Image (tube, rainbow, N blue to C red; front, side, top):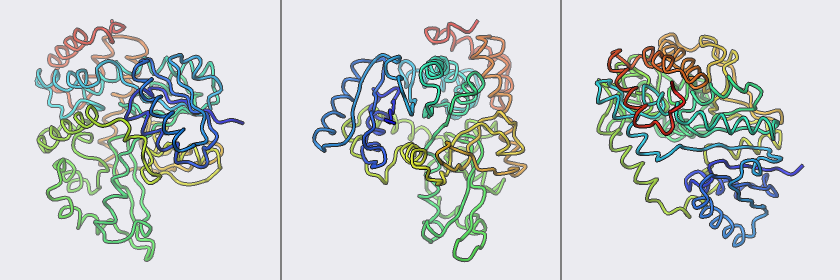
Length: 422
């Protein structure tokens, strides 16, 4: 059977060309048809032109299709990879971040957690639901791989409305562990066995051992991490979590801090602002062609190894995927979307059971349960009352008045995308 890989949102140079670069380096995916789909014909055309040139120059064994028609793109799809945004990504993101701050809500970032994460969710989830509805109708057996943020809230809502879809969420944050742990512990990565878990952008290293001796390496992590990370940006909250809860976060202050009510007191605010400015400039100013020249060691968010693993029945382990809980973490609800290790085989992607997480960290995660559930309900019902409830159960929100004012301002400024909220 021919493999048909559909990239939804392919007009983004960062996503489209980055993913193409990884696919082009895969021998297991050779012969596949790659479908580029985007609603913006100009950006789609740029990515298509670069991709066709690379295929021709390198004589690559792939067929390329580009279309603005989702109906056409999804026909016979084996894998559907979603990475979209709505409107002007940075203008809206900055509104999500700054408007709650203007009313005194001390959120440290505005992408995934806190009020900013809610507003982002209200804007981006409806079009993703439309995409998933079409997938369920046109290619129901396809694997659906989501890259878009806010990862947990998107996947929770999709899984609630379309529970039969083969939905997997992927994020690259876990790559920090293979990068830092060998250097910190002065041992090869191959000598370390470790696992991480929690929620997307809210996950910690849970266990780590030395393979050669079988000894617990977490004692060394706790001892060496403070000196190792000294001077690194965005490590204020990061180090407080390690100090107070005893577990190493897999991501930095900007992401981790969105979920915690006392984060504003301890995060590295300058580091967060510097990161956002640098990231925005890089995304806007990068040379698009460079994203398609990746190497196999730079696999984009692990999507290619997962597709290969399904097709080749690899039974290999992935460090982190986002899946419905279904007992993977026993002290979180079954329907939460959790980030856990997984085994990949011909039957799909299977989360590894982690059991009960440490009580303190699990308590921080539990604060997000109602937030996620109410976000899903708000999107599916369009109820302003439920949106306000989602704000008021969020631990970052301190005031009814501030929540109402921030919500009213967002609904006014982003009415083009949020007019379904009544």
